[in-house]
Amino acid sequence: MPLSGRIMFLPWVTLPHPITVGGIQFMPIDTNEPAQVVDSDITDAVKQAFQHYVDLSGNPIQSCTMLLRPRHQRRWDNPDRLWSQARRATEMLALSCMAEQRFLEGHFSPHLNASMFQLVGHGIKAGSNRFSLHFPRRGNDLRLHTTRDNVKFQQPRQVQGTRCEIIGTRLADALTDAYRTGNPTWEPISSSLQFFFLGHSETQELSLDSCLMLSAMAFERLLEPKPLQKERVAQAMGRTFAPPLGTL
Image 1: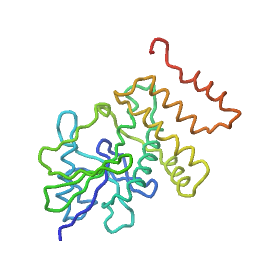
Image 2: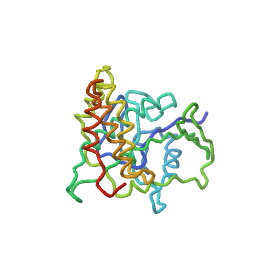
Image 3: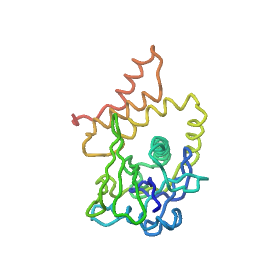
Image 4: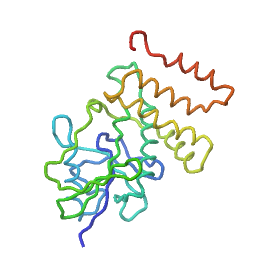
């Protein structure tokens, strides 16, 4: 019976080195040489899957970051039931990388945004020209089954010119520990991440004012002000994140 499974990867970012976050190993790989992390019987199917992801010029990506299950015989195979864990681990990784960005240093500091860390789930089968895609949705998730012919997924425009050179490993370890142990600090961090990433996605659908508002909401969720302090926190956030004059 042909070997099959589901790979998960980050097509738009290549990490500088492997790292394990939230129980998931993130492995940077050459998309033309995936044999280092997958079974030989499925190597061609994995290479073909990567060919569907292209840059703004239409050229297939040359590298990416795969999600692996440590200590598992088929560590490359990530079934749908692991999607929530993989997404959470990816969020912790993204925060650990973006926390290392240095602003006001021009070209000396690589630019990062949340869109770089888009997580993809891709079902594959050895010897088959069909594949499946997993899209999380409200209610029931969407699974798309199609052939490989003429299917391309283009890099988002806001990812152009970004790169990740440093991973905040100490922050990644601390987030993993808080997540695994149920530390009280994890809940406010977890509840703020979605607002933070959306505000830092740099997508054209969001204005500067909306990004500032989302950032303020993220910090408010992170701080978890007590009922008697909420009004003062809201006023402080309003002053800090007020958009520059003339942007409204």
